[in-house]
Length: 383
Image: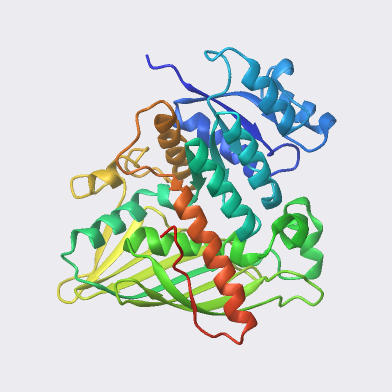
């Protein structure tokens, strides 16, 4: 039996949505063990949250600084081997930098940081220390997303000509919707950073485009806004973009689309076929070729046809719904394997470079919108 990889968590305590998701996904992954945490910015809430999460009292810490210092002082065979950061955006960079400086690998929720300057500081420390960094872009852990990527990469469908990606939600459609804990920090520039919806869900859409096509997004012309009066960060926006291979695309990211729950979907039109995936039906991939019948590929039943990179992401037998938690589990599994020195050939987690690219996307979208939706280049020195 291989020993599970030990991890600690910063953030994700009482009232948090994403922390329990991460912890459940890590448990599903089967190769991770939560051993420590600083689950809240309040020492008392952190203690209560740690108890609920099953963390031993002597390893449930009152701050991320205490967690890093005390875990580092433990024997190597006991201390956490990586630290998961699931806080509001403004904590990502300082916590990750402290963890990297102390010799820990870091798995951080998207977006990478709150600002481009913080992202570059993060990157500089990671490069200097050589520490492993992963970013949790959940949707790259879905089997059929990986299948789309494989079909495009094989080249038999021809060049990608057009992409349409849409991520629409309705949970912030009114001013009153921003009263809850999960919403408050997302509409607060001091904690969220430069972006609202374009940082929270737009980065997922951006990452999905680059992951599936295997191409960098090179230019963007965006129109983003705060549709709800008085809101200080964007809650709605759209953009046109160019891909490095010559394709063109559109991207919508909005959290004021009343009635939409988690409407992430992407379509690609190559020279020989169109491919269509919808997150709310994640086990299905629709493929429509220039001639022949429409094809519906299914993650559980079409195993003989799936690419190996998609097969490794399939966790359940045919006919069993497989989605968000299983995709997240693939990310935790692959990151733990990398920490243990068994780096997957095609890991489910996003890289630091992917995280930096996401921050450039946010910055470019805001720059473009500020100048009247003019075209802005995204390519930086990291691409």
